[in-house]
Amino acid sequence: MQTRIEPRLLKGFRDFFPEEEAHRRWMLQKIANAFEICGFEPIQTPTIEYLDILMGKYGEEGEKLLYHFKDHGQRDVALRYDLTVPLARFVAQHRDIARPFKRYQIGSVFRAEKPAHGRFREFVQCDADCVGSASFLADAECISAGILALKALGLENFQVRIGHRGVLSAILEHFSITNHVPVLRALDKLEKQGEQAVILEIENLGIDTNKAKRLIETVKSLEGLTIAQQVSPVAVHNLRQIMEALTNMGFRGHVTIDLTIARGLDYYTGAVFETNILDLPDMGSVMSGGRYDSLLGMFCGEDLPAVGISIGVDRLFSALVELGLFQGARQGVFVVVCPFEDVALPLSLRVLQMLRQVSIPSEVMVDFPSRPKKQLAYAGRRRASFAVLVGGREVQENCLTVKELSTGEQRNMGIEEAIGFLRSQFGAESGNGQGT
Image 1 (cartoon, helix red, strand yellow):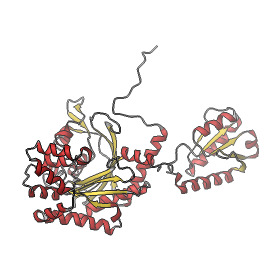
Image 2 (tube, rainbow, N blue to C red):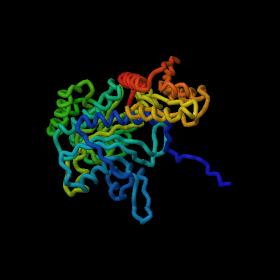
Image 3 (cartoon, rainbow, N blue to C red):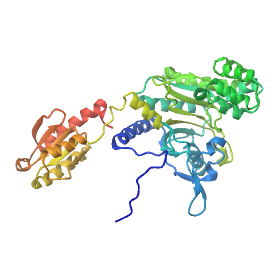
Image 4 (cartoon, rainbow, N blue to C red):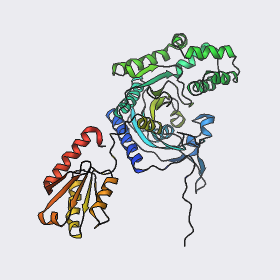
């Protein structure tokens, strides 16, 4: 007897059951469709990169979370932390790509964080980025793609809060604060940790309490725009241009200026944004991003403007479950073909292929011949809407018995008629939001 291996998962990693995975794929397809409608094209990059590609991009706190190791060739490699730095490497390595380059990517990223509720070491990101344009319209296009993706999932009551690193830097200059990066990291924690914790962190950077309090009061009010206008009118103008563009796109009800948005990663240089579902105020941001005009220069040798958004799939998934927005995603199959006798198998398989040729999700009961009760119970477990019953009588008469599982109603039909009926039923169900 073989030695038994205990089945177990690494902490922070997950399995997904069919129903949950079907929901996830439905969600990801909706997001991908929205990105493509906005002109973003898909790419994919490796899960593993050279370690030096990823180091020096995320700040000290981020780099502690990198999964890195030596491969069989003794090369220092790492699992990707996000999709943005691999994009920067991709663009620098393929310089003949037409610009502006609008791409989207959906894939797993890895962070060696302490596992906690809703916090995992492997999770999926959905990113849409525009590389090669410094125009405010590139920012607006990325944000609008994200808004359309959320709307495609049935969300309406959400708000994109837009800040600006240039505006925040101007405010810090107004307060004669020179060490911008650690202060911006502290401000980024306002929502999660509260004012007192952030004030204490700023104090630990050598800034007195009163100045720290005045700084927080300023960024929490639109007074910050007035102050920043005196120091950096270009940054304030850029932020207002983005807002105006999104208003002209019809999204004014979904966007607002919020100068407390700083974003923790070091590579952001301009507009930054986070998105909250207003019906779930404790959920946190489900979509975030910003402009990072200097990151690609690390690979290209010259600055290349870029901006992007990232949708947090796991948090968004939880939101859709809580709001009951997954009732439109189909799981299982639409039809189970049930051969009751050996003689019925050839016809059953022919019918199965006819259903699949018209794109109806279907399967045959593989454990046959078995009692009708057992086959219908299986069809129920598979969440099928219909069962096609095939026995000796159906073979002799060249017909099918179609049973609607929710009502128990049975119809005896010719084969072509049955296929047409099932096709129309599947189309009607899909049209009501049940299909993928």
